[in-house]
Image (cartoon, rainbow, N blue to C red; front, top):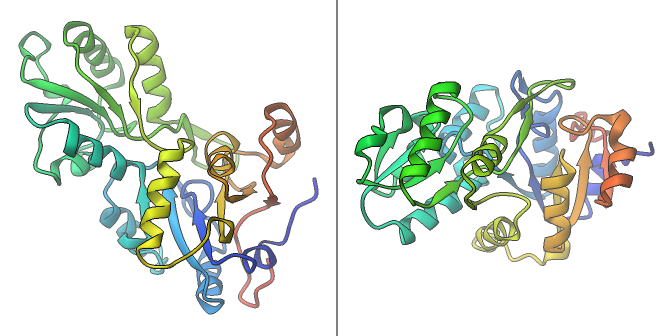
Length: 287
């Protein structure tokens, strides 16, 4: 499959939206070469933001994780996450009661930061749950998959409360060859079991891209045709960018394996403007 040169493509744009997992990092750390990529962007005065469905931690903690791996170019202000949209919804739509959550204690940052009372699903008593006003699914870790998912199902059978999904991803890459189940897939399963419709935030929903665009306009005045979305997944990053009306680049360093990319593009009909092996850039600017 013909691929493009990353460094020559990004020079055509003023702002780059990067997905996180599979593009900048995976479970083992940074994708090789990305530190040089962000130096390259700075040298060419290209703005960038990380547009992620990761709601496992707040922007500050996500930025700290990048810093620990040597990527200091990404601070909290550069991170736009689906958790931020979920938090905004909860701020205006849930005024009282306790929010139960599925995920790690760190992931509850999004709802605790706005002063709402939270309770991990493992601590919920289904038979005494009248005080639970909503359920938020935040992360695929931090709970007992068998016991706590069954508790979620029984809570939703007993209580007619809104369920908010802060991450629509169904899987995320842990290496070039392997993926892990994300909270979006867990949410799909629970939704089918209980027969209710949940509220979702994150790519590919256009609301995520509108939110990101408004965030960008606070620091740089840019047209949509000057923005490039870079992601590793056709069904979230690429279709989301396409629907919002910005150019898209598929990278083959994460969810989409190089040998399957052509077939997936043909069968889904989701067509990126560009395809690159990764966002890695050598120090001299040659991808």
